[in-house]
Amino acid sequence: MTSEIDIVFVDLAVIAAWIDDEERATPRLAASDVARAARIMATRDADGRAWRAARIATRIILERWCGSAIRSLPFVIEDGGRPTLPQSKAPTPQSAATAPAFSVSHSGDAALIAISSDGPIGVDLEAPRQLAMSPQRRALLLTAAARLSRHGDAADLTIDGSEAGVLRAWVQLEAVAKASGLGIGRVLTAHGVVGGRVGDAGQTAITQDIAVRDLAVGGGYAAAIAMARSALPSDPILAKPFPTKRADLADFLKR
Image (tube, rainbow, N blue to C red; front, top):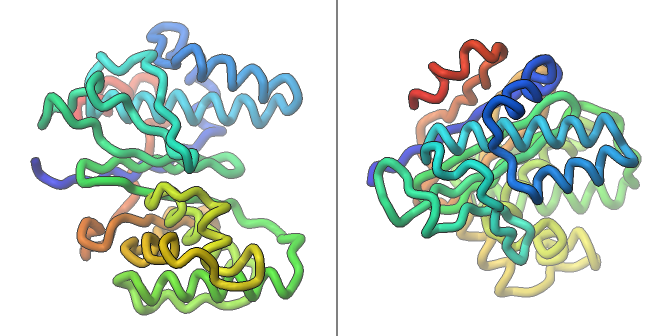
């Protein structure tokens, strides 16, 4: 099977005008998605609507790879919080047995969705903002991200202590947490951000097999991608835009 990666940037504010109409016309969400969106909207309406729009977009992008058979399939949530498709029920065009790996992040009015045919992938996205964070925690995040970048394939990941620099460090750590399947809590502990010292050697070793790289998505957002070092392409990886109009979905689905 040919290795392939799709990175899609979604403007949630733009698609809000039509994404609910699309879901009503062609339901793709699982019952668990609908219930989770409702729980979030019950206390934070705007956040819940953004989460729901991002989940619909994720399922449209997955359908682009796997076909309509995956509609309404519940995702399997692994121990570290990583969502996956049920392997036996989500055939890809290339293989009847293997579902693609995917990763989702949303922040502000945008979402970033990645799909890979070559093993686990992690992406993270953060909108520009002021951080309520102590200098000590900033330093720990920067040190952890620098440690991870030394084990990757991009030696130029020099990160400074500015707001933008700390967000760069954070998205890199989150992307590694997703790609490794460890979850952000265990990655922060393994690399000394939580607990104040480098932790479990086994978990640290897992993250050393992951390469991480910045992604340029525009809008001032910080974004990163992480994969196994052997799987992350050396060529630049560009994010493509999700359709801004419902009328363009049919062409988008013709992957």
